[in-house]
Image 1 (cartoon, rainbow, N blue to C red):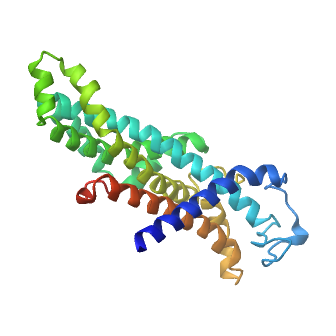
Image 2: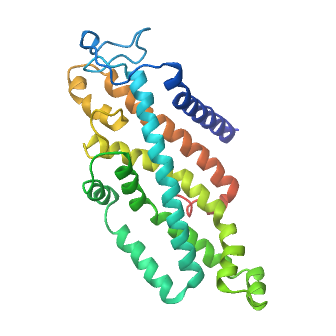
Image 3: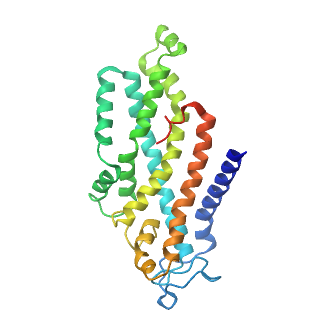
Length: 274
C-alpha cells in the first residue's frame, strides 16, 4: 500500500511539473528577466506567490523557466549518456577478451576522477551555456550504464537460446543485435530515468559555482547562488522556492524509477542503482 501511495504521489508531482513547464510560458507570457526595482525582495503574496528576487523579478516564473532548463539538461544528458554507456557495455560484454579489458579500463579511468571535478574541467573549455553543461553530464554519467549493460550481457551470453543461435551459425554481430541488445534495453531505459535526477543536480551544482549557465539566464542553481546575500539578510523565499524546485521534481522522478526498478527485477535492486 505504501509503495502504491509513493508511486501515485511521484506520478502526480511529475505530471504537474511537466504540465507547468509546458503550459506556464504560454499561459503567462511575461519576461522572466524583467527587472522591477520598485518590487524587489517582496515576500510571497497573491501578486507574487513565491515573492520577488533582489531585482524585482517574479520567483515563480523564474523557477518554472529554471526548471525547464534543468529538465532539458537532465533528459538530453540522460539519453546521450545512456546511448554511449549501452554501446560501450554491450561491446565489452559481447566481444569479451582484450576488447572487454580495454573498454573496462577506460571506464575505470573516467571513474577514478570525481564527477564534479571532471564536469568542471569540461565546462571550463567552452563558453557558458546549456550544451557544455549537457556535455559535462554525459562525460561523467555514462559509466554506470556501461557497467550495468556489460554485466547483463555477460549474464545473457550463458543463456541457452544464445548458445543455440551461435551453434546455428549466427555471427557475433547478429547475436548482439538480435538477442543481447533487446534484452538489455529495459535496464538501459531504467538507467536513463535514474540518471535524470543526477543530471539536474549536476547542472544545478555547476550553475551554483558560476560555471554552468550564464548568470542572466533563469537557472535554479543560478537563482540559489544569487540569493545567498538575501538569505543572510533574513529574506528566505529567494532561496527556499528554487531549492524546492530542485529537490521535489528529482525526488518524484526517482520515486517513479524506483517503482519501475522493483517491477523490472526486485531481486537486483543494487545493480540498477546509479
